[in-house]
Image (tube, rainbow, N blue to C red; front, side):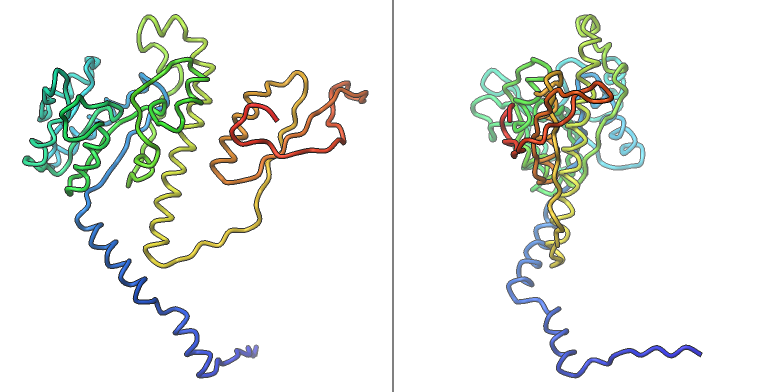
Amino acid sequence: MVLLWLPVASALELKNMVHARRKTPEELLCEADRYEAAIKKGYLKIFLGYASGVGKSFRMLDEARRRRERGQDVVVGAVQPQAPPEVQRLLTKLEIIPLKNVGGGTAVDLEALLMRHPDVCFIDGLAYDNPPGSPNATRWQDANELVQAGIKVIASINIQYVSELREQIEAITGKQVTQTVPISFIKSADEIEIVDAPALESLAHSSQEHASAQQRQQQMPRLREMALVLAADVVDHQLSKYLESHGIRQHFGAQERILVCITPRSNIQEMLETAQIITQRFQWRTICRACQPAQDISGGPRCSRGPSRDCPRHRGTC
């Protein structure tokens, strides 16, 4: 027979435990406000692509088709100016609210969508500026207004149009964009889905892009990595909101560190950019160390024992 001795808490200790778990009136009021806002608010889902031609529009509109076949009230609020044949075939099966002509340009017909108030509204392409005279300056703000009105919005965007990542992606692809979406809106999404097509599948998007297929194939892994990191940030943001709404405090352990060893033959810029992405993602500390060529059995360079130092997070050199 095994005897277990369990300490019994005193009445005072039990009272303190109850009081420790009891929420303050301010916390209860904040929970009530968040609950009320969540009831009124719609839902935002984003299809994120890391390159043009990976199939975001088809994947998103195919979901619209499936929802419509299940009996949901579905409309398409915006489509791309040029759509491939497979996307055009999907559009023939869906109800489309045409874009509205405003000041010589086009914008989402926000008024018509709010009056129609469907269950789900699909917007193909978030990174568009609206012409002067529109209710909102950008299309992503239109989408946000629909969400706040209680409509479920499902939209698509390429990672190159995220404002905070624009410069990094321009350095990789050499393409400049002027119409962007802030990362704060991406992180506010309730759900995010990466359209992760194989690199070769997205290379033959056009004859011009096919000519530079080899160069794009080298760019794909880095763009894909950035898209995965952004998606992980969205999930972390969702978790933080959940913990906050339930009064759960996060406890962080020791800070991790990344050591970047640089040799004269290494690609310094690529190594530091990768370290910067990881550092910003996990809030870690990055340390750079120069490796000087030295006589070794293997004949390769080895790290010197000189002092190391922290790498600036937003520079290209140590």
